[in-house]
Image (cartoon, rainbow, N blue to C red):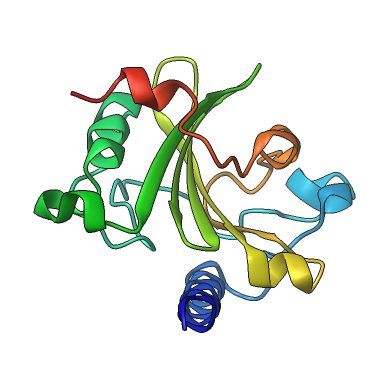
Length: 164
C-alpha cells in the first residue's frame, strides 16, 4: 500500500510540476541541463513568487533562512507523522534546500547571498522514464548540473543542526 501511495504521490507531483513548468523542454537529462545544448531548462521566470509551490506547505522560501524555517517543520503540528523530510546541501555555486515527500524531491536553489534563484523538482517516476528533473521556475539559462550531481539526498545534510 505504501509503495502504491508513494507512486501515486510521485505521479501527481510530476504531473503538477509538468503543468506548472510547461511542456516546452522542462524535463531534461543531465546532458541537457541548463541549456548546455542551447535549450532552456527553466521555461518560466521566478519573478516575485516566493511560495513553496508546487509543494504545498506553509511559509515562503524567498530567502535561505525562510526556506530553512519552512523545511524544519514542513507539516506544522503533524510532527513525527509528517512524510516530508528536509535537507540542506551546499554546492560550489549554490545552496540547495530539498524537501522530500516519499519519491519526489522539491529543491529550492539559493545564491551566495541566500536569495532564491530557482525551484526544481526531482521525481523517481521521472527517473524511471529517463527524465528525473524539471524546473518549475528560474532563469531560462539556469545550469542544473551541480544540483543534478549533488541531489537528491536521503540525509538531512546541514539542516539537522539548523532546526530548533
